[in-house]
Amino acid sequence: MATVQKTSRNGQSPLTKGKILDAAVTIVDEQGLQALTIRKVADALGVYPTAINWHIGSKDQLVADASGLIFEALQLPDDKAHDWRDWLRLTAVGFRESMHSHPNFAVVIGNQLHSSLPALPFVERVLRILNDKGLKGAALLKAYNAYVGCLIGWVSLELSTRGAAAPHGEDQLGVLNKLDERLYTALTRNLPVVANKAFMVRWDTGTTNPMDDSFDFMLEAVLAGIAESIKQSTPQD
Image (tube, rainbow, N blue to C red):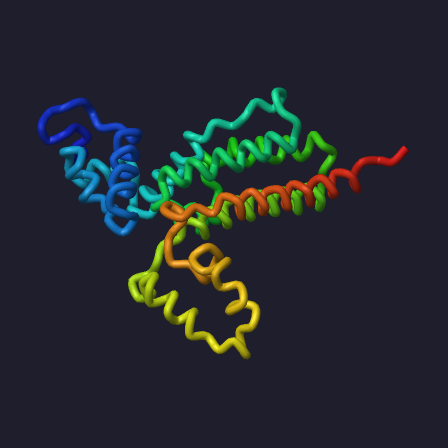
């Protein structure tokens, strides 16, 4: 049976999964997710595509493993150095900063429904923080889903990009300026406030037009809801 080529074509050091994923992240960061292919990674590393397949498998697995590096690189705060609210706040800020460093992975992170091994330490720590504050059962599930769903969904939406068929900024602003004030009273009245700053009426991605104040507001609202749930779950004297 023929062996798979696992070393580079120019005789450099043996190929590893880590090198493959680093190359994949670089390609996605520089050229976008649509540019990532097995062959392009192989060319970047000077190996044959079969070597990438041997280490990784399919392109879908390559994308999933590369995006998992975002969670792998996330530095989670020390549980004992912060109270639960500060820990969740710092973790959320850290995750958003990581995503802003690799914005082209936003669509992948937001679409991942399956268990990802690099993300499991994040899952474990969030559950533990909430558990230690007395949340369990349905209350734990609701708090966890609210925090993780709002965090990952919000950042993914913030970093979403304009589709090929979407109008450019000036064209979109022109459409908004022509709205019938009788039908869109709130939108036309508040257009200077929301244009290119609010979801669904913006055209610049969060990489160039970050939504810091809105993120902080969302995060504090979620933490306030979790605090109320903790209060309700705490036995009263």
